[in-house]
Image (tube, rainbow, N blue to C red; front, side, top):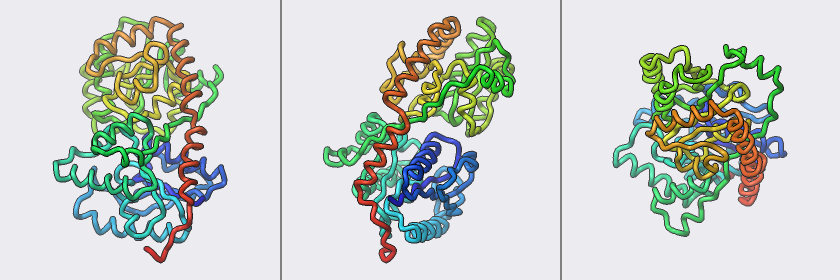
Length: 394
């Protein structure tokens, strides 16, 4: 099978991480695997898998939404992509994130291979700037065309599939064109004590400090302001602890101000975008995800796969995959005091931390192992026939 995946950028994020993983896995399984990136900038640029050709279309994205000034550059990028598909005889096209999905849809009108757009979020139309009625209508029209013109629309969880179908008002026949390929993560062995100690030292942690880890873009969705508020409620009342939030985004200045106003400068740090999240997880003692919405968050699965106890928001996309109180502790978004209480509970009970970590890792091993996800995706794509791109149609 000759397969290409389209990504808007190589920014640090769950969708990008998943696409790189799928690209490497398909190549390892003997397929001709390619990555096509509209703008190959970002923190994952150094993580491009060896043996997977990558193609930078040179489309420099200037904002959250496309404007009239971007049309000419987009047409140039489309023509470049068509040339790559024809030259490499690509038979299957997989697209990620809204811009990648729109781009793939445009290619279908020029004779592209069968394409499969991914849905990574329970709120597919909440990406970027809040759309007005006209823009939202155009977005939904584009996704209706994807449902009709794609081999299948791929959702990363049952809840994402349901949310998308409800948002779009899809009937039964169109709902059946949405296929679930659940997110999966590699299960890494726990680091030996010397390695963990070395990693913690490199991050400036003392031996007895509990490390709380949050991972994600600094946006309203990830809701890290609530975590900061919750942490302010336990300052000085528990064993030594520090919190690291790994990620970057438009709310960084606001969160830095919240940290200062809470007097947590020596307790909470924002790392900016990092590409060695597994190292941070190997160092951590607790993972916290206070998001207000998610699809099937890879960072959560990675943390649980690493054996970390989890405190997270009780939202679709999280509650659907974990058993509250046995695999994770869940609180209601907006209830910072409730989050404080759960953090204190975990701080005080080492046995609880160990039990949650073990149960979470077992859940990931049973239901979200990455190789199982690759199996499902590979079977779906191979059923398309994967015939080469017909350049005469371009």
